[in-house]
Image 1 (cartoon, helix red, strand yellow):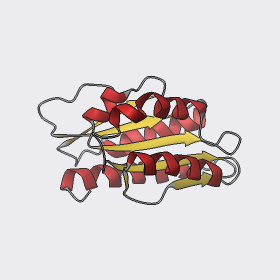
Image 2 (cartoon, helix red, strand yellow):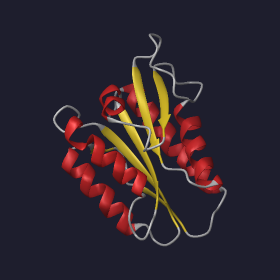
Image 3 (cartoon, rainbow, N blue to C red):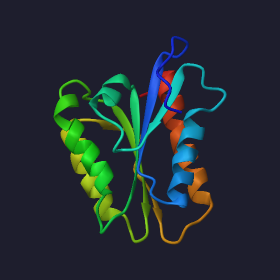
Length: 162
């Protein structure tokens, strides 16, 4: 769902998720599903691939959910590119932005987590919960966990908790 924020919604959750495989696309779809729960009345979900998103998307959102694969113990190059292109444009304007992260990790995800946390710390964004690391072989429950993470973030934004 890449629709512009309409008048009926007062808040926006931006999902920036790298999804190079069928399984990671399932995770991105789960994130969109969670953030578009039917009981959410004031939050609109906008989903973008990291290479398609820019500073204007971050400036327009009220919270952000980041999704990445673990690539050689680091975040995806696409997510790193997103941060490279947006960092200084949003640094002073989006401090305190509520954020969450999920990592699809074939190994342990700790290097990826450290890398993203380092950038988010520099941006002065605010974690709403610990990063979700989906480790090891693919499990169908991974999508459920991402959907729950996204739904929790969206409901927190709508209720003003974050």
